[in-house]
Length: 420
Ligand SMILES: [Zn+2]
Image 1 (cartoon, rainbow, N blue to C red):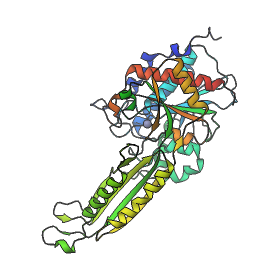
Image 2 (spheres, helix red, strand yellow):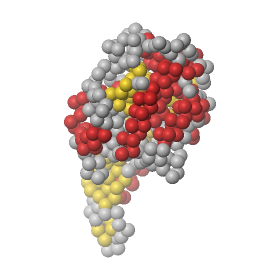
Image 3 (tube, rainbow, N blue to C red):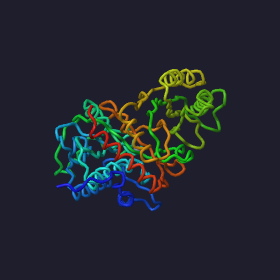
Image 4 (cartoon, rainbow, N blue to C red):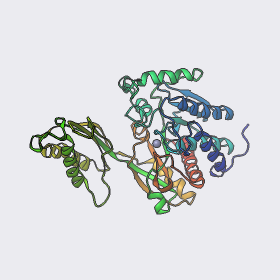
């Protein structure tokens, strides 16, 4: 029999939650205090085992789907009703930090524990989810694989065929991980979800600098990724005359300078990054014959995304010099707005707890982007130190971590009992 019901937010145990972060950080921990836990790696499997051991100790059941997404469940009174879900990812960037993704999973798990400790019964079941392979740069070049497949199972086959830089396919890595968890009962993709909340560190400096403990996320920015390739001709740096050169790097530099001027936004809403530049043959005394670079462009306004993004090819063609140029759009995703019942419940929980907050858009993509295709969705941000993430120095304060989990727990309670 459950004991007398207690206050849920007061049952969120900040030191337990912090200790779990520190224990999880040892799985793939690096000497500089970061975490190296690539998708589907042995460390990734070990981090899931650790979470499952905590779930078992609390008597929560767990299931896994065919993409190794894991669902830890605290049963509600109506077991047949679609659950309220919350979570994020346990994989990290190469040499990443202790909080990106992990906070969302552990805050959700803490909410389950707090519900248990407070002897609160919910109508719907509440689940803490671990989405597989969220980090793009860490392995397969595309992120949020687990949540993408959950939202759209037709992506399973094409995404399974992606190969990492060691020649391993997603399918091979996934099968290894599925074999490592033979005892977990399986669940179908697209089992209905009633609503989804993802807690995450901000990965930017706005909350910290504004003195806000909670960010209520209004949207995830749309993004367009491009690859620009320049085809010139390699030649001897000493003997080949200037006039006859087809220097791919010089053309790339010209294009990059023009793009930088075009995308410069004094209001600082446009996000424009050239994150990868490859030069071939990349030799000191050789005229570069081939260059490729990537463009990551993000903005909350679909019109700006279209108009500005479409100019990439125009600028490249105009400034290619004597080289050939090819522009490929390698990814495009629309802005995902968060509105309605979930952000409302987050706002109510935040104000009830008297926490300083602001509304904030996310420039970073998250699993919530894909789950929003299935059900009402929202996100809670907490500050991270100096806005730094994807870095071994990534940090968050124990107080903010606990406050975020309190808001999450109260939000999940409202969503688990409401009628819709
Ligand atoms: Zn993340």
